[in-house]
Image (cartoon, rainbow, N blue to C red; front, side, top):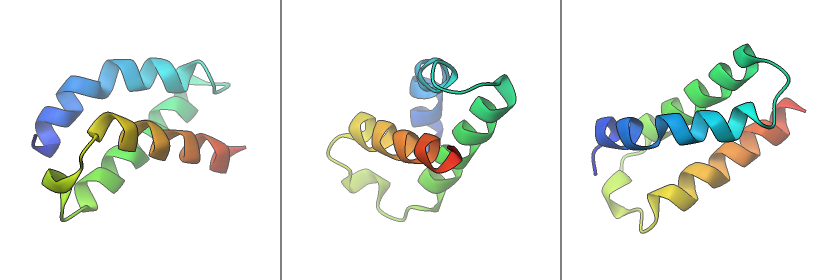
Amino acid sequence: MTVSETIITYSKQLFSFIRGKTKSIEDAEDILQEVWYQLSRMTNVDELENVSAWLYTVTKNKITDLY
C-alpha cells in the first residue's frame, strides 16, 4: 500500500480516534499531520506487516507527547 492509499484509507478513522482524545480540532489536525509526515519519511513502508497497528501506535505516542 502506498502512502497516498494509506492516507485515503485511514484518514477519517484516525482523525476520529484522535479527536476523541484531544481538547481541540486544531490539536487533532496537528497530530494527524505529524503522523502522516512520519509515515511519509519512512523508506520501508511496504515492509510494514500491519500498517493499521503502526499508525495507531504512532498516533497514541503523538497524543501522549501532546499531554
